[in-house]
Each structure stands twice: as C-alpha cells, then as structure tokens.
Image (tube, rainbow, N blue to C red; front, side, top):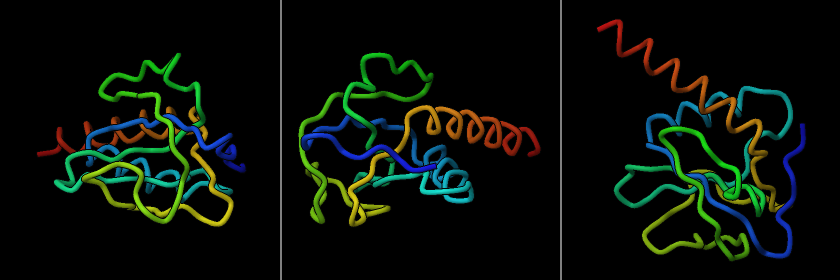
Length: 119
C-alpha cells in the first residue's frame, strides 16, 4: 500500500502519546508497502506526530489522540518548533494513510493494555 502524497504543501498532524506512537510505527513498518510517512517527536519525547493528508482533522475521532489542521510543506527541517524527525520525509514526501494509522493505533493500544495487565 502506498501512502497518499502531500497535497499543495498542506497536511494535518495526528499526535499520540509516545508509547502508543512507537508501537504504531513498529506495526506500520512491519506491514506491506510504505504505510508510514514522516513522523515527528517533541523534544521531551512525550508525543509523536504522524503527518496525514489535509482534511483528516475534520473527521478524526480516535480516543487518546488529536488531529490538528496544519499548513506547511515537508522538508528536511522539522516543521514545528521544539520537534525533531523520528522518521524524516523521504524523496516522495509521503504522508500516512489515516485509515491505516487508525488501525495501527488501535492495535498498539491493545498491545499496551495487554502488556500492562501482565504486570
């Protein structure tokens, strides 16, 4: 599966707690195709941000996450102050498919819950 391309230098940003985000990145990278686009982390490493197609914020409703509308191109420099790239943009400037991200975040939440319940 190929991720949608960034359109007209706009994208939305899905932010999640770092632990869930790292699990989701792992899930997405193990999948077939290029399912994960650029991913940001904040300097305190509390959250991860997935670049998704513009318009995703209009219907995003995944508990424990937020999706904000953002304007900005994807470049080698992180687009938000106080952030860095966990996965920098590639040559094609792809973003993560929100449907695939939603599934990965759900699976990540279930894995984390199962791990926490084993203690």
